[in-house]
Length: 445
Ligand code: AMP
Image (cartoon, rainbow, N blue to C red; front, top):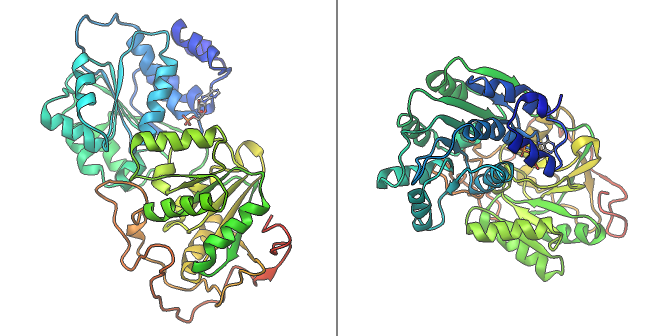
């Protein structure tokens, strides 16, 4: 299978070969012909599968067939995305593929001034990449008209719903022409997504690549039990011993991530943070610094990291365990790709035992618990402690979305909420053991 055989315009084929794309990925091979034929499409695919090109190429192909009208143009393609980072990434990809086409595109997202976006819309665009909240702001101000939309793409639809964007999406959908093509990409297809598809799509074809929540077999899952107050020192200890690796460290709160990056910097480990409170420019700068290896550690919240085009890394560290096990799967997707070996290391304090239990259930195996000498927890980690309210899974973790709530009883780092450990099944993580992971030995390596 080649891109040529998919029937894409020569200008697109040229851009693809310039970017070194030799063959379509499975989602591209399956989805592109269906989209070119005009079908609505439900695409089950996660980041890293090539899903962006799977929808971008056929819609650019459509735009390439018409000569752009003179004067300001109304958008013909709308791509809805959950976060600014994903907007930037999708937009970058689109521009790359469209480099030999006359296609005007524009990004619309919150956290930056409206003015430049209004100006860009006024100049005229063909493709609009937008987060739902800010797009509604523009619709209310009358700075955007959506009555010429021919193709709607909803990218990472599950995450948009997770973030509470369903009402906004519905408000947008009713403003679009009924005669249109709708493409929906999602890692999971829960009831709400199916309902959305049923209501707003026409006889959609389905394409699914890789089973949901696939976890690479090549990833080793390990955990270090530790008191919450010692997590930072343990992290520094691990990073000092593994001084060659670039690492992504996941934290739960924006504030916690910021502070941790600062503390690592002070300890001589160059770190940058990305989360929802940072301006777009700051986030992009941080990500670029990490990609260019100017920073060794990227400290991120789940939402800020989602969808980011981060290269395969040897090690992912969970400074805090995620509030939902599904996010663990997303986090560790940054390592162990394409058959490479990878390691997911979690620092687990006693209040996080329940979260670890949940993760083990999803992994269908126990996470190896390894005590690090000098960082042994003052009390054993019990897996039968209560799990914090899962509805608050974003718990201040890096977005400004309406659905984001803080967990009741959730505290910033260092101040764990009191919990009652009740009697329950025996710990499943296996007995804690000492191993080579001592202060002098290589931590958990
Ligand atoms: P995505 O899943 O859309 O985020 O894409 C993941 C990465 O794969 C991006 O860096 C793309 O540039 C790259 N990519 C997408 N399609 C191809 C392809 N057919 N050949 C090589 N790289 C690709």
